[in-house]
Image 1 (cartoon, rainbow, N blue to C red):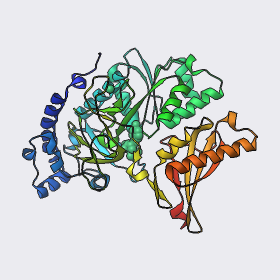
Image 2 (image 1 turned 135 degrees about the vertical axis):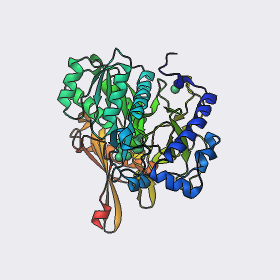
Image 3 (image 1 turned 180 degrees about the vertical axis):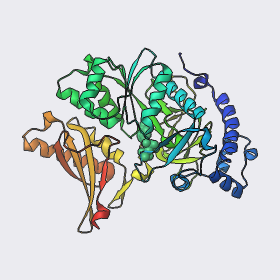
Image 4 (image 1 turned 120 degrees about the vertical axis):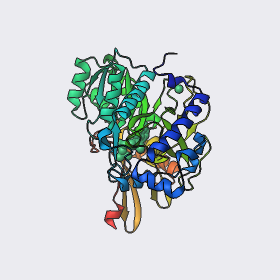
Length: 433
Ligand code: ADP
Ligand code: ZN
């Protein structure tokens, strides 16, 4: 099988050996930062206490709040002279955090990203359109660098302006796209509205990531854009994209364990959960120099997929992210994740590509409303059909989440969408009370 980097086909023994050496180095490097110097000193930790990568469990966790507290420089392990780039998270769950990189860090990141793209069949003969924000968001420059490293003709298209995106795709015979799932659906609908057969267009691969999406959404994207879509996972704290990526088997994302040490824990107890069980993913940077992070609690929920991947790679796979620990909301005592709602909605062929969960407090009672876009061809005047659809959606949602929400069917493209990550929950309860 063709591969991009030797590390990609390391066996478990090689991965373990490298992780042991690299974890030791990571701890030594981290100790140069004011934050870890203090924490390690207080707990008597040094790289000399690390004998194996399994010793990771003796190290303290680092949380998003720690990063916020350490902003902007307490986590830096090198001098400003050695730093060449700063990125920040999108700030989806609060004030953003910043991550600084050395030139070495950027090179490693580009290599990892190129490895991901190569794995799904992207080559230097491809024309690659990067439909992502070029700014602090890492999906822009991060994936751009990987595509150039691989030798693709790379188009930094940025976000928005659907007409121009489609013109670029057509004029330049683009073969590979990077696009966030919610925008991919929007773009696909725009094509459908124009009556264009996606199979008449040149793209054959889409890299989709940056926000949670269900398997049903992937299949819709593949259908609407006429591509194979591969899930791309990353977070600014771990560079950005290039942390975990689906292979051609489209069954779980390989975490590049030569660069990241992977753990999945119970978010309540901090203990590791067995493979196959959902928990919070915890990642450690093994090779980063500018800003090493030890046992970073990602707040992302997933599970390690047991067993070997048919592609032969031994880097372990995680399941698609089901959401963030923070995404969970409680209605009438039931814990609900937006992904559960999405899963139900996308099972209905009449349902379009966008939805919004609105939470309100009316007369001291929690109310959950789900606004659901309906495809134009189903948005007919037959009230009976729509009422019956509304009822079936509410019933199926009830069996999934144990709450019966009010379902409102709305026209395609009527739910406002921004240019970035989709907002699935509008919780108005605090404002109301
Ligand atoms: P923010 O946390 O502010 O959104 P980032 O832009 O760094 O900052 O985004 C990283 C986060 O995006 C991840 O922690 C995860 O919650 C989400 N994410 C990234 N890729 C995926 C993916 N493929 N599937 C689901 N969620 C993803
Ligand atoms: Zn695989």
